[in-house]
Length: 111
Length: 115
Image (cartoon, rainbow over all chains, first blue to last red; front, side):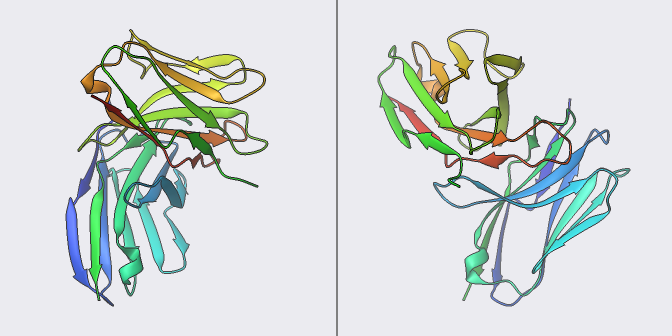
């Protein structure tokens, strides 16, 4: 059974800092890995999708890496802003459609 | 192109009542997925449906829960005889087809409170 763990559970940083969120998974036979953002009381916004054959994806100030063999992914956020405050979720797919989610990292960026 | 629409956004039910949650996928999407997020827990996959077919319901509780995606109209997640433990946020996602390269788009969720 796939288990997805995200560390840290919560993080508070001052504006402008670069930061790294970690995700680990127990079953490396994945099709893809996605990072999402969830704002309080809102839905999920997909940030980056990495296929199992890829090592990283970039979008703006976000960079996600994937090391499938070790069961790890990191989300790097450059030059953090207060608007980045949200919960970041990591999810992996072993079936090609169903996603297994971690519990998330709650990020607070202070001005 | 509107996103995935879920309604109602908030639903309060008394124990024993029925809850019906609706999900309208994005235009052109024929694949729908339901997830449940319990308090302090991660999202858990419940069911995957295509038009008129249930493809995978391995995450659905065996009793009281059912889902459908008719030829016309939204997908419905139905919870009969709700209990306090059903209180959660229920999210729907949709995709145009089933493919490992395809990301699913999520709705804003229905927050069910059972009192």
